[in-house]
Image 1 (spheres, rainbow, N blue to C red):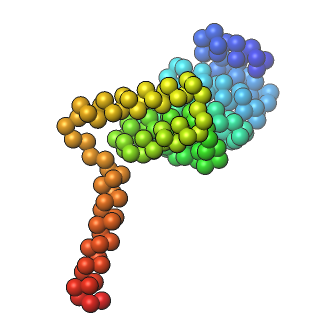
Image 2 (image 1 turned 90 degrees about the vertical axis):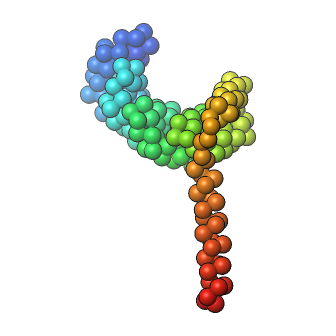
Image 3 (image 1 turned 90 degrees about the horizontal axis):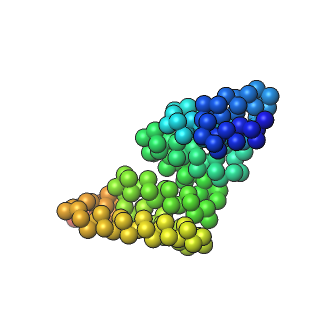
Length: 183
């Protein structure tokens, strides 16, 4: 029954696949693959708000499969819940730090938010994590595109770098004030 549902999903009969996966879940309520499949069908129909709970259930029932995390985070990002998606990717990378695809997609979210330094850092970590040739090409292409975009902008502050400068500067400022007043 599960294979039939995946067949419908693969052939593009998304509504039928949703129904078939739901039938599978009636028989086996804890079947992570059925939740994942139904979530994929919802995702293909751009019903991200329906895909998210299915991917959450798939992740709950099979937390070791990184695809459940990736699908959940991607659905959240598609539904403009960027910060929640980042949290899912970061949690996945804590468990599986060498998972290159998560580094790539997390970098894309950081770029989308304008946090360029963190995006570059994620891609560098991805490169150090022994990516496949295809993943390496994606990383290089993303970096190239980002560099091109940055050159075309008049000014785009790097908020992470500014935050770090403020931390460093405030520490120095406090030291100077304390030295001035002798406390």
